[in-house]
Length: 243
Image (cartoon, rainbow, N blue to C red; front, top):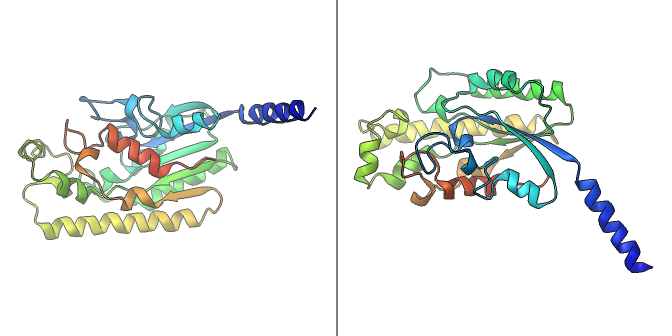
């Protein structure tokens, strides 16, 4: 009798967890696994939804969730693109959103924009769609650490002649200028952390992504800038928390 009751309890628990969880990903090339192992998008290595690494989606599925995912991140996107990404995701009602953005705003590839304001606008639109939505807000990675980890590689120095992130990787920058630009990232991350506190129980800011040191093995050999499969996996590990 007791054994039967325990089995019934376990089955009921499993059934309760079997409800689909709609996962929406907003952001830039990092969330598309860009240049992880080859040139271009490599979504199978995305920290958010990849199936060749222990991604956020894979971790959710390992805990029993049936995940329906839509990865709407766009390579090269700045925070001003979030409205477009929401538009392209119209009709998909997320329960959980992974939002990673800001590197392109701070790399010097776009004009100065209000990253915090754009993210706040996006959070409000998501809440209008579903007041119970949960949002994971990732900090901007320490791009200065990318330079420090790979600056001894001549191959990387050659690759950085392409303006991937001139605010950090340009050969004409001084260490002081890179430090100033890293301070700008730190300031944006502080703003994102503060923004998350305005939405308690809804937005969780992932401090570790903006503060965790970046090692050489975390960076792709394709462009010496984007995360490698190892780096993508570390992003997922830092960000994950069971809903």
